Length: 140
Image 1 (cartoon, helix red, strand yellow):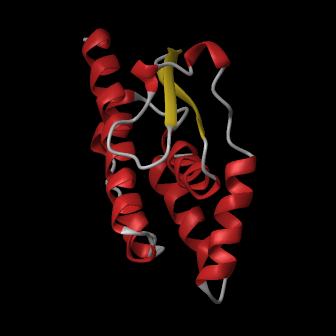
Image 2 (cartoon, rainbow, N blue to C red):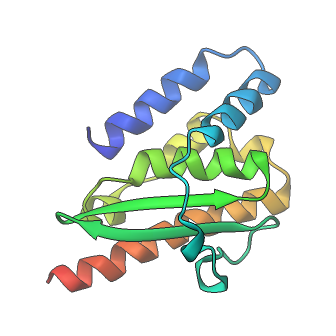
Image 3 (cartoon, rainbow, N blue to C red):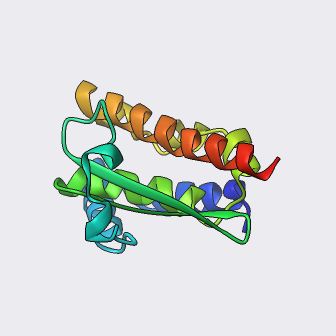
């Protein structure tokens, strides 16, 4: 599936819920399915700066696709990173770099996060894209 296909799938899933309490619960459930980062990567250098909670992200490239794993010490934040990883993991660096993140606005996520969590969301997206840029330069 392309990033856009996955993003559309996420938009469809979120549209099934009537209110934000149900959407938050869904995000918490998504966080429980997150491909967890190996403990050896839970280091200071893998923490996303700008997040209120601790969020660790690790990326590695296999067959020219980036595989992300992550974890967080907060359940909502874990759900947010799970959504992003679902959209961007197992994709080529170029696809991740070019991908837009309008789906975040379409599901209304930014509007329903505290300002510090919204900043954290932006930091998470930036970090995933930075990994993609780093891996893309290795491929050239």
